[in-house]
Length: 335
Image 1 (cartoon, rainbow, N blue to C red):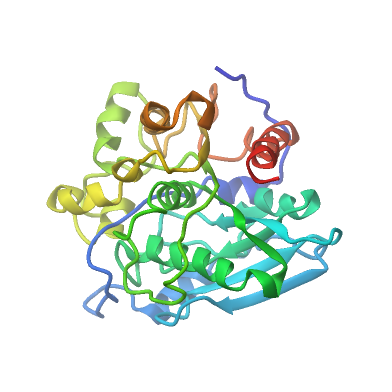
Image 2: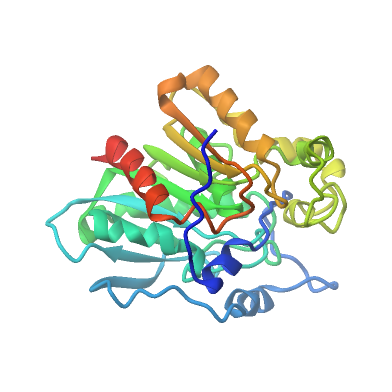
């Protein structure tokens, strides 16, 4: 088990990374105004965070590009390296926030943006939040964004055959689900843009993402860790809100949101990292996921790093030493 590195990082980045992560499943429809938040209000929620990642060092930026047409949320930003000729391998950066908040400009994508200094294009993606639409809207959006990258690779000097999905917390869940479901048609949802392209990726970096929602409460009870977000099977939990109602009332749908449901021999390589004292997502989620992936893909295709005593994001994930390891993994798979 890996010892924690714990470098000094900014408080704003720490706060962003400690934000909750979750999921929700139900029909992919806009919520009505019966006490829930409409799309316009969800947009304001997305803007609520005062912190944005610093991108001033990146010379080539293409911002707020629509990748689908259902919602204003369906936009992405493309950041290209300042040097190099390309076509560049791509990191699809997926923000966290419990599926109910967060933004593609949030500070939690700062580690992914380090990719532009290492020869990668970084594509930061917004997706519909749970106030606006239920599962499978968020993963459908991520898959549509990946298809957009492939369809427009030549325009932005991208390599459509060298793509990694990387996210933390809820973004880690979506990255994992994009990775295992790339060869499945089950989660395309209502998005039909660039449907002739696949959403397959060649690598996944999953930072402390939840995998099997139905086991979270049980795993916290077994671990002795008090869950920061309370009981996850409850109707008011982030996961239940993402699903549209209590997890126990949507068991079949919840199983469809589990990345483990789609594991096949065609899946990409995975790097999974998690803190053993995480109070938002039990570490056993990642341990079980890695074991299930290894059983199908083989030991060489799945790396699991556990940081002893680390919590939900921040140190030691963003330490220079750890980012070197993450990019070493990506270089091996994408370069």
